[in-house]
Image 1 (cartoon, rainbow, N blue to C red):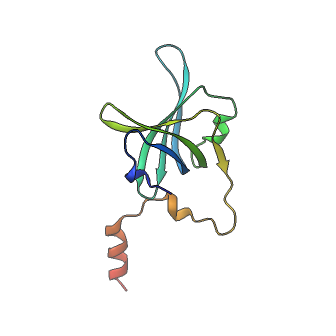
Image 2 (image 1 turned 135 degrees about the horizontal axis):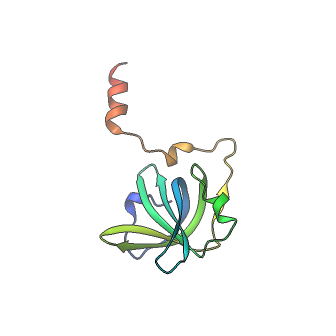
Length: 117
């Protein structure tokens, strides 16, 4: 799976990500969309979902792991994930699920802890 830090403008992405935060928003044209931050162990990316369905609010709740696809676009100098409507699903972690793929860990912090042993 490609990490967020490796995304480039124009790519089509399919993967699993942690929803670290989300907000229901309304555009200038009165169109409802979700503004989210997706995360993996390499970093975060702003994400937008247009054409929101009622079921999307449960799928994209903060703290959920989601599997989705969409396009990477550059907007105002920053990469953004445009989520394809109707394609996302919430992942229910089972036995052996590796949460470390979704949490950023500081290299400095790890080295400091290891140096104490």
